Image (cartoon, rainbow, N blue to C red):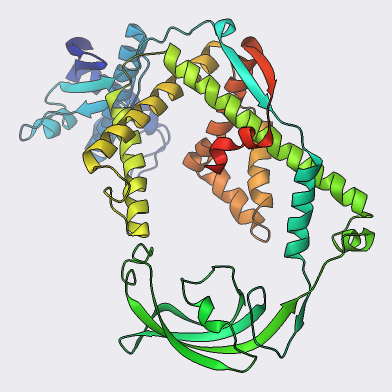
Length: 446
């Protein structure tokens, strides 16, 4: 086998590989000789089928298998001999001349092809002990528990039927039929739909037209869909709705006591407050972790500047850009509505794609250098967590992950990233800083 480097620019490498026809022929004969002892053919005793006869029948398929194996072995040898780490799968370019491939398969010509490689650049990892970070923490205040308790009370308000006219805060059950230019439209009708007046669940103006109605009353009115309504076919257009109010219910008051806590499965109001405090503490811890992780990734990005593999960047950008275009289409918005241009948006999201690829390679390098892996038990636990979220479809979800390597890889990736982050945080200089809840959740709330 002869290997010649024909191009090397940036992270691109190209090699020309020639495997002599005699080597391929020898490999084919080995396969056929092995096959001779196993194949059964009419007119021949087991193990006595002549190789030439086998070659006439199985020669081409055997040669195809030999060629595939030769390409795979040659490519791996190039990678090993040159100590390359690939960013993408090798791209094999076979000769395009008429009859060239057929001549190789028939044994009349050497196997000659070009393999194009895109490599990961060498990554010199920073000293993690030099990284300084602040971990923001916030205590759960009694006022926060009070607000959470009030929200639960609001969600569990009792409602009782009323004969008086509906007003904001009342719960209605309605049936409605919407038409546009006299014709029904998709999503414009519903039966026995619950609606809390004043919730803003329906388009502007719809709920206002129900105030003052009593149970059993009907009303027909026109409302205009917002100009930025997600369904482009309805945005900015006026529809007529015929609505019948089936029931009107007035909200009652909730008394926050032990009896209320028991309706939620807890022994007392004190136990309910404790449970809320624990839940809020977990929310605080998650926000703190997310901010710390983001700060760490920012530093890793700043400390590792290198050219990321172009193909990986292009793949990441295409995925991000596709999601952006889909979101804009669903929201019936343009780049101008977002205060930018498509060109500026492309530059912005390409920079994001480059950062993601670069950080992904840095995290992979940290994991590789420090033998960080996701164990089968950890992966199995992650699958079980997905299974628990789909009651009644447990076996379906389990089979999906066990039979879908890409889905399993997508589940493994964040587990691996978190293990690498934890490893680096153990070495970094991390100090705690007490802040208010508002500061801890500031970015999430904006």
